[in-house]
Length: 171
Image (cartoon, rainbow, N blue to C red; front, side, top):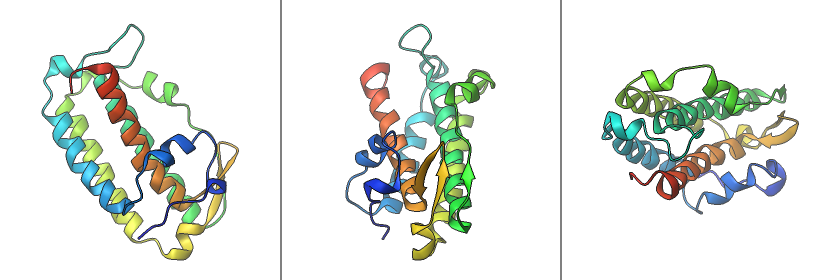
């Protein structure tokens, strides 16, 4: 079991993600979320997936694409730091979303991509040793541990699922 990271293992901005994760087996949670999110998104219609709750806000497709981008980014950081200390640049979610066209893809395709990305990350996480989980590095100018990124994967997804419930009103 991967224990919850201490507050000095992640930035204050990441605290909201880490704090959303219940005291449970985080890998099992990632597996459960992978299945439930896949089911949720892959069952949406094109009309539902094109919905945005306000002008200038992302569509469901864009949010799911962003979730996959962030999944890859956090997992890459965990991989790099697990191999030993290094410094990585920041990640601007708006640049990523604005420079691709998630809306031209089917929601089923985006859901399958998210599921495949998560599954790959779960295999990677299961391969980390206890020593690797505690290794740290700098990302976006802040210190993070490998296990912090694992919790951030789950917390980021939980954050967006809550946002969908609160703002999108289609779930």
